[in-house]
Image (cartoon, rainbow, N blue to C red; front, side, top):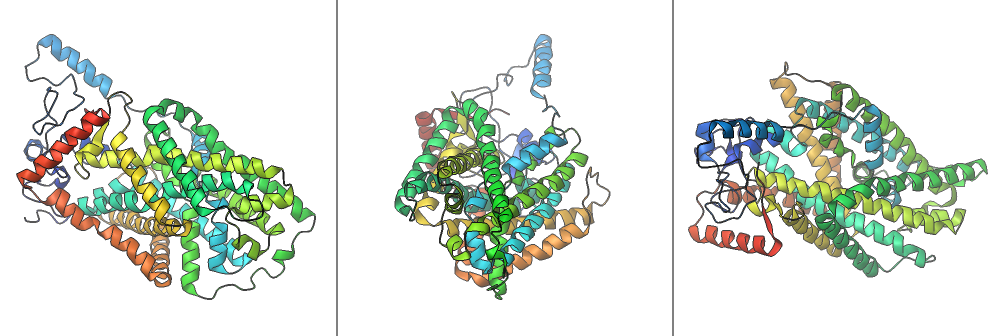
Length: 559
């Protein structure tokens, strides 16, 4: 095994200058891969010599050389087409090359991002941020700082997204810039440290707010909440696998309930301020932590609390003027969300003392009980539906990352398969569900926030480095939008500082997270680079893949 080019990490003679098209993951051939699939993540299509060394897409047969069943593309044929066939095939190609309509304007971008940014964290994380900062004033400042960090990082994403409009997120940004190994680590970390913990966090939040009104004077039993959360997660997975078109239709309704819940809380808070409920703001910085590690941890939690805006990376091809509207939507969205979240926290402190906030798992319900007790049911329903809506969106989005990774040989071939009947990626959804359930029953809310915050910070560093590297190596590259130069520099310094302080404060927990992230290196070597694998191993994997296909009625997609 030898390196071919410095910019392509772990290139091999077999893979040429396109190591991502190696012979697949856990199989001799990756039937889900075709040279066209590499376009989906922003790479150039390989030439004939390179394509011949990679995986084949199979012919017009029902199975490929490894016996894996596929949903075949009828335009593939071993026979030479006639002149009429050529015309028909050309029409099919033109039909298949239809692109998404650019129909989103600035208003649409802002509406979407305001709805998804922050998910349901403001109903759960205030107590964790207050615990780390030690005072009301410091916690409000951290909420502001967390919002500004996310805003500047979103501007970096906007530049890369408009520069690489087909890239599809940080996974491909990093892979395009630094090669397949760093890109694989981004995808691996996202699946293990974000998808599973995030699904668990959202399901737990929904279950907690459903159960908590039944226990108005004490905390709901944690085991019971987790059992209900597991049921919610499994139910939403089933709906996504079988009733996708109906789930998509109610997504906007589920997301809108967060805005209603926050509006109720903010208005109630303003009324309390007018009444003179300002006792908790008299010495608002009293007790502020002087430990830099605690402050770094608080910023990590705040950065997590503004997550969800990354959906902008999936809107690139549908925005009419991405170079203008995306950065504007970032500024408008974060101004709205930061004000909304700070006002929500101010509302909490009008009636709840810091010890009461720290002692509450469902702070929104505790607050609304003080305002008008009958409203607790309304807030409970709205927060629960908000969390379920965010969980639904996550199931739809996160599973597609595994699906895309399989198509370029970075994940097992089975994750690139979909249901014959429902046309949804069952294997990807089911494996993430299992991991989400493991995280739900093995850890607490703080553990989930730790892992998600750790990965988000690490991913932010990688994306900013990619942006700076492309600025240096390709200064004349067309960029529909270019953020101010100090933004990525500040983001690099801040994210590194937050990461170092978080590791300093929780070395064991963060060490476990980093170990999980970098365990992707031997997995990458074993799954992608090690070729050829023993025949018995290939036969074993191929056999179980076919068994899974027959049980789930799934097949690979045509490209």
